[in-house]
Length: 155
Image (cartoon, rainbow, N blue to C red; front, side, top):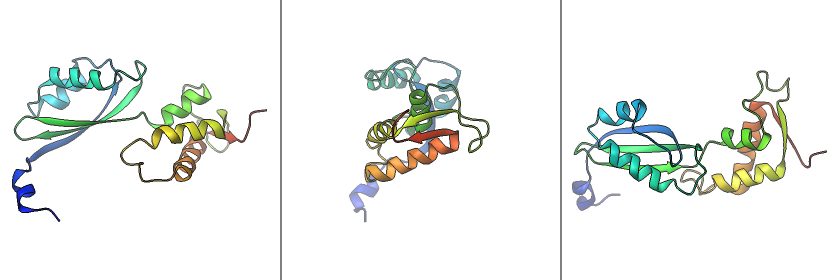
């Protein structure tokens, strides 16, 4: 339960904005301008902050960003790791999944790939309390829905 002091010091939230931007290469453009401009947020400051926070990732890695815009024209944002589908496509070496998952196999990966993806995703805020086994099962399910076969070892 929140205390009275916490309730009184909270800033009113104007919106929560979800974006997908390339790591360390965000630029002022139509996407950022339309999403942040309507809440009167400083777009250049956001781009600089985002690029500084995502320096450690390879360029053009699609990063999920959750921006919380407050009514006083300030913001906070959280950077999430790339999606599981992006990691699976990179591990499998394909551009897109199967058009008919379950019937046509697009590619094959090993359990080692699944384990590595699960370790990376475990650092995300919404996965930090999940076990590595549960995250791995989720990655295997996502791979199956993309038409990627998971084997113990490659032949």
